[in-house]
Amino acid sequence: MSALTIRPEDSCDHAEIAVVTNAAFAEVEHSDGSEVQIVDGLRAAGDLALSLVAEDGERIIGHVAVSPVTISDGSEGWYGLGPISVLPSHQREGVGLRLMQRAIADMRMKGARGLVLLGEPAYYKRFGFEHDPQLTYPGPPAEYFQRLVLEGEAPRGTVSYAPAFG
Image (cartoon, rainbow, N blue to C red; front, side, top):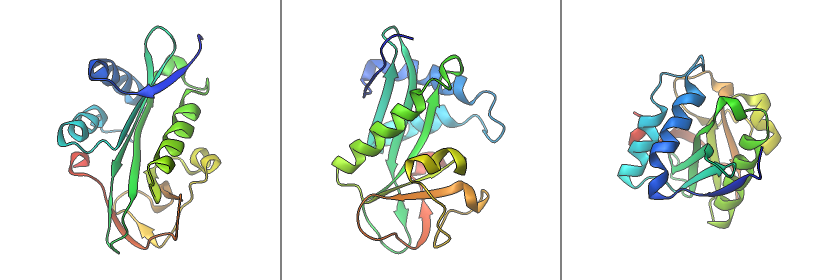
């Protein structure tokens, strides 16, 4: 693989991001195939707080989206990380790792208080994410909903994602 570059998305990247996202989630058991529509909906609504792409020198091979969330206790400055996508042919090469590290660092620099996500606990633990029973998201198994405190105290309550998540 050529040198990997992580950068903010550009308006000319949207079609490639859709291709990467579709490919990344095509075989995922718990996916309903809506990830491209979620990213497009976040973009259209102005709800993309951060959108990063990973390029291998030739094309986009990864993407991560970050959008604001609301928490029932009124906590502000919290964001949902995801979807995060890597082309299947480039998975297990550190692309997702680099996207996660950059997204967390960029959100910290923007003054975010924390991040939440839905994902495999064993994978996201390496970034400091953990399940917190005081912070909930109805629907999926509770242990898959995790948070990372970047500043201040952990919130308590129910999380709601941006409307693009449906």
